[in-house]
Image 1: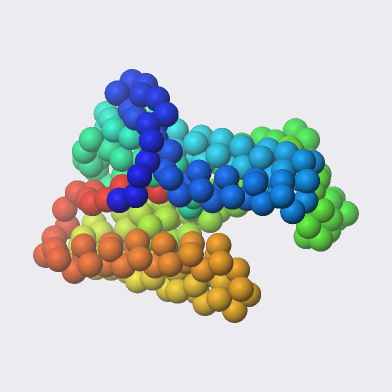
Image 2: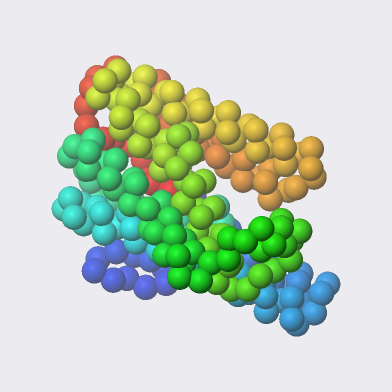
Amino acid sequence: MMASWTLFTFDRTEYRIDVTFVILFGWLVVSALVFAGVGPAINTAVFVAIVFGSVFLHELGHLFAAKAFDVRTTSVTLHFFGGVASFARQPQTWTAENLISFAGPAVNLAIALVLLALVGDLSYEAIRLKFLGLRLGIVDDIIYVNLFLGLFNLLPALPFDGGRILRGLLAPRIGMRNGTLIPGYLGVLVGGYFVLSGLFRLDTFVAILGAFIALSAWNWVQWAQGIANRPGGGGGRPRP
Ligand SMILES: [Zn+2]
């Protein structure tokens, strides 16, 4: 595991930031400053802060849902590809596991929908400008970042929250092993797709992200292959 720093500890939960997060977003801001000037660097820093805050609130969604089921969160760590919450123990039922998994994306979708209802601009012109890559302001950024985080994390593939939910729905029916293997292999496919599309478009970030997804999904597959096909309770690994 790479280095991470504890920012603060609250209610016996450590809030940590991973070195990958600092390197990637530090590099984005510094390169904007060097190649484009102070204005673009500030815009980039604001955007990074929005991503940071949205990922953090996503993790708090998991944390509070876990608390409701009497599961303590030992740490919340922000990586460049998102956050990971670690728990003191597994929830006792698949329903609890599924609700804890859903709570993170639900926070992001709720933020996006509330802001959309209040101030969002869903006009054709606004969406067209967004696709042209023109910035529309901080509130629109918050809406788009949260919509993206909410929907992306609901992909029914491990290691995403949606993959955990699919696993939580399948495992009681077809067993822990097969119930984990299906979303695990889907995660390997999703990661592989990102690696290939990143390479084709010469987009290093997407390719690296894809490699992380595929590797993490492959860990799940390996873990599942090592267990007997028992119906069992929620098991395994930290949650993105
Ligand atoms: Zn999550």
